[in-house]
Image 1: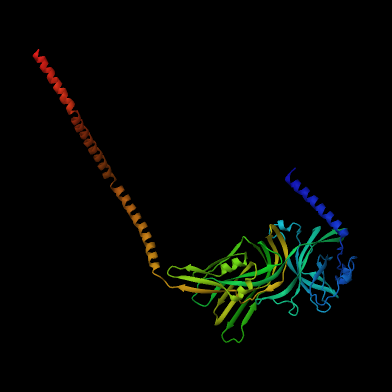
Image 2: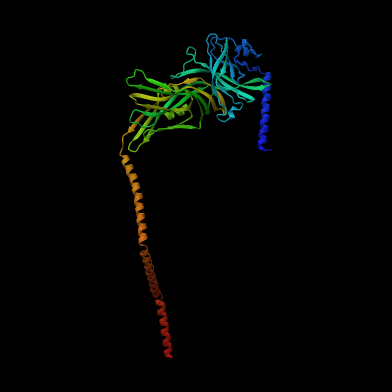
Length: 507
């Protein structure tokens, strides 16, 4: 069977099984709310109690008023006729203190096998909520900037719902941080399926991980050595945190934040500074423990920095308290980077660090001084993929929206120009001598080549004469040697002939 056919057949079987499970789940589920928004031409919303009471299993007595419980609890969701997503919340203390829900974390991806999914396959987003109706402890909200998908089977994985921070009831974070929204766990995956013009719902409980303590800050890295007051830098924004689960290894993290350009100037003679802002931008960072980020400055004798996107607090503290030496030839510059006492106090009791953004910073004189930078606020961790006891988890995160101190980096940099030494003279001479040796060898080679070209005929003649002369010498040398060697034999032969001649004469 061709591969495409196999895949298609498996996909059809899986889809049928999902629909069957959904239908069975609806039969036994108390979650059976229809699309409650009105469908007439002059579109208007029904009340929260009118919607909730259409669910036969809804019992208002299960949701008592509790003056001291300032949480927000999600009861149900529904899709409207205009493809809007509605959420219904229980506010136990709403009759004594009105605390509206402000935002919600939703992923529309199916997440049954979340731990096996690659990074970014489950994409949590933060959506603002608009209050439509409230009654007693109940409230109905519209999820802003959200459009219901046209898929037959639709998933809503909801991890968190938030309300505005209240200084009278909520704990203030340490280190000069501020909280704009307080998070409450939801941990539910809803499914919606359209069947015979009705929308059927199911709901499954899901695991989450909660941020128990965190600190938002940034490190400011200068671009290079400057003789004048102005300079440029990189602000490396981070969040240090602890969780309600033990994390042995942290692999991935998704982070939400808001970034806004800010220009500040204090001109001589002005009674108040001038400050202008850009439009806030919602940003999402997708981090991996294997990735590194860095910054190379553009100033004189530019400095270089590098950091990991995910690291332990111990690694962070060890790398950030350091001195780097930059060589410039005649002199060197040492740059000492030190974490401030305030920064250390707020970081050292955390376990993990996420470096989620890098922004530009500029400071320059202008009859006073001016600086351009980006404020990073409302930082919230959305997802963590981690390992504990050999098991890998990939969970949505319950986390506040928290901001750091925009004008106070958590590090200090001290630059120091080292006085020149005589070592540079020796180094310079060594470099010159290496060049001179190369030039000398080249000149000798050229001279030899020229001599060979112009003296070649004489060299050939000389070689021929030399060969002949050596040949003659060898010939005469061998001849003389032969005479010497053969002399005794010739003497014996002469003596033998003489004796023989005498014998012949006597006869």
